[in-house]
Length: 152
Image (cartoon, rainbow, N blue to C red):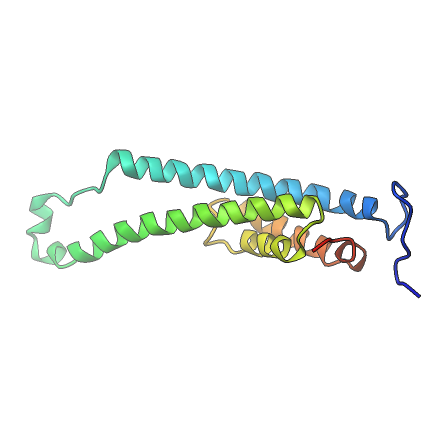
């Protein structure tokens, strides 16, 4: 016997695809919102970095023996900041796309990845929103009736 019998289209039984679509709708939309905010913030950071350029250390500070030895470290940190912003931008795109797939119940693995990425605070600038939304999304998509409704 099948655990969730096939319901006719449009039925609202506990194992129906329509019920699963309704359950994932809110967390998927909120994941898209948090990912969108993260993408916008990352883009603004990249634009700011391009417009402002690398901030040079004033010569009087660089010549100070207590500060001068840290100049290479400061320069590496500035370039790492740009790199991490690009990574955040890419992960925001993955989160947005995964949330879009989650909303359509299309790709369980990508939906799971999107929810997990949202939970990791160092990848999204909107971590105070992403953590609870990501946890909510994980709880919802791992319900047996929702998980079985996914295609692919």
